[in-house]
Image 1: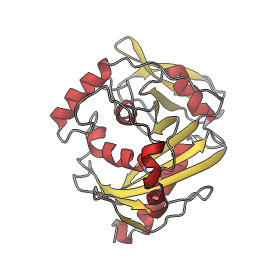
Image 2: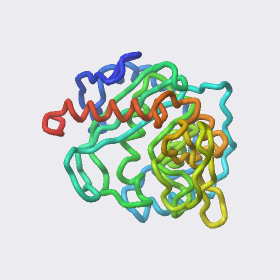
Image 3: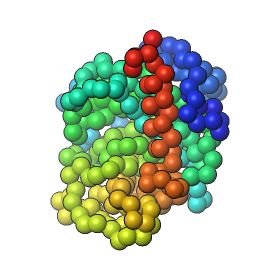
Image 4: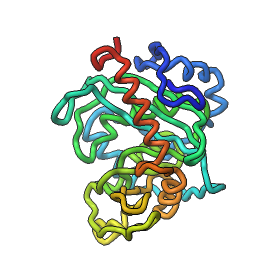
Length: 277
């Protein structure tokens, strides 16, 4: 795990009660975790990460139908947690259940300062299947985010939101599981279609699905390929775009996601032959 202000370093890990491995600095905060993370009532009463595709599909339909109040950031640079999962190198195809995995979360004040990080290791709960990413990655991402030294104001994840067969992709699902506002960022849309935005930084264009805007293309730097921004839990597209732009520095990818991806990959590299030894 990377300590405060020290991205990219990984400390020794130890098993957690759930079987996932949590870095030492993340374990230090467990005693005060109940105080930092509020006791929130989830609007969905079943288990937040079902173990079957059928169970996940039912949950996605229920989550898509909910209309929680929209969150608005209180300042220009909210406290953002970017999170990312990587898997063993060299694998082809959709992966498999039980595949070794490393998840990282990085806490940042916009694009300016890193305020904490955490890495957990575990295994994928399912192979990859479009529309069912939560089955594979959801529990690992939640574990990494809950290992942070304090809760973020908004969560950013490499996943879709309403651009999804059931309008409830992992970006929305993860926010609902944590009861925190969430935003998704992807390289391309899942199902939606639209046109390219203008050439300047901050230019956007709508992505449509069944006559509704479900995501936006956003150019984070002049002249670079746009990314796709997804509203998630308790966010709309205007808010999602503002959070992503405030979190983007010189790279095309928002800084919290870029650092989380780097931390997860470094943890994988520190594991012998791609496995936790």
